Image (cartoon, rainbow, N blue to C red; front, side, top):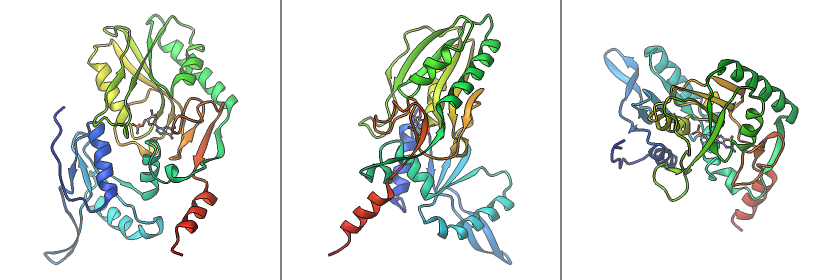
Length: 300
Ligand code: 5GP
């Protein structure tokens, strides 16, 4: 896909970083393309709202706000007004916290600056995972009777879930894996680093994911798999962070819908660690650690 050459003057470094992430996943964007009037005095426009980004393929506006949560009330009011005046508009506000969590998965932001991230709590326990995986296995076995599905996993986060899920599937099936590059490495765009070994033409393909967050990875992968002309293509994900979704893909099988927290364990990593935890836990910067370092940095 041809991407536009962008070189806008970004108002904030976080906007430039966000634009890089979109470029990496091949999501087209325009920076501040439209100003929407939100208030008038007679014929005169007295207030406008200019969302930071427009993503034309997704018909989605994004407003990135790196202000403290307590300072966003005014922006929220403007956003409400914008939605009242343009009920069909598709707009998402990404708060500072959302943005930091987005960065966390690429190894940047406050989590990366914390010397000792901590498991704050267990979000989904080992037996809960096992019970839900068995339910999904039963559902998939029923839906794919006589279809000999190919389960396609994207390495590496999915390996625990794939291993457990496939052992709960009682119909004949095969499995294949691929892997892709991640944002933050030297590549400027996402690419396949390990391709599939099997032919997918006319096969019933079930893509198995560990977690779907913004959906940008999944979007890229589904386009790639669709081009192989499978007889059908569906998605099964263990975790669905729906609150953060930017794309619009149907997830046929979902283990758990989770809130917007950075999770590790059961195959999911942070900088290649924590994959061996038998549960899914929430990883947070150690706040004591961050506070200590802030103190050490303060002028003497
Ligand atoms: P998306 O492209 O949907 O934003 O992100 C999907 C990928 O980001 C997942 O396959 C996973 O590798 C990573 N990811 C997203 N959220 C999390 C999370 O909370 N924890 C971990 N460990 N990885 C995540």
